[in-house]
Image (tube, rainbow, N blue to C red; front, top):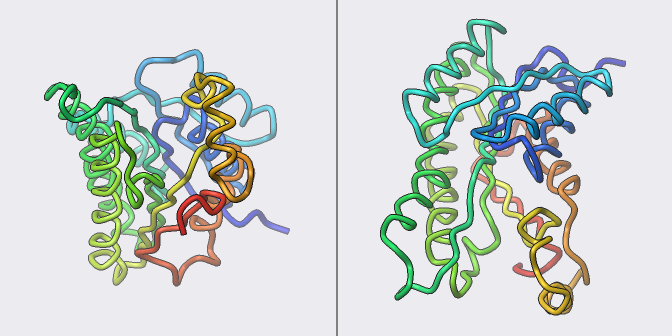
Length: 249
C-alpha cells in the first residue's frame, strides 16, 4: 500500500521545533520529502531531520528568514531545482511578541507582522508558482485561536494571525482553479516552548477554561495539517480548522 504523500515535496517553515517539527515528521511519515526550514537554530533543525531519517523518511534542513523576500525566493527555487517540484507548503514560522497596547513598541509591532503575516505572503507567492505549473498544491497556514477571539496583551500577534486568515480565504479563491487548496489551522493552547514557560497557576487556569480540560500536543495539530495536505482534502479550501479543545467555537 503506497503512502498518501509519496512523491510529494513539502516545505515546512519554522520546523526546527514545536508544531513545525511535529508537522514535518507527520508529513514525512505519509511519504513526503520534507524541507525543514529554520532561521537560527541549526542544531534543532538537524534534530528534526534526524528524526525523520531515523523513521525512514527523507528530509533536508533549509535555512532562510521568511521575512526576507529575496531569501525566500532563492530557497524555494533551490528546492524546485533539486526536486523538480514543490507540492505542499506549511506556513508555520512565527513568533509571539506580547505586550499591552500602550507599552508595545512600534519595532515589535512591525517585526511581528513581518514574520507572522508578511512571511506567509513571501513563502506562498514563491511556492505557488511551482504549484501552478503542476496544477496541484496544498497550502496550509498556521493561524491561532486568538485571531478569532482576541487576547489582551497580544494585539500584534492576534492582528497578524487574523491577517493570515484573511489571506487564506482570498488565496483560496485565487488559486482553486489551478488545483491548489489554501486552508488554515487555528490551534489553541499547545504544549510548546512558549507554554512550557507558564507557571503552574497559569497552566491550571488555561486547563480550567478549555472545555477539553487540557492543552493540545503538537502532534494533534500536525494530524490536522496532514489531513488538509492529503489527497482526500482536495475539495476543502478557504477553511479555518479550529484545533482548540472547545476554547473558541
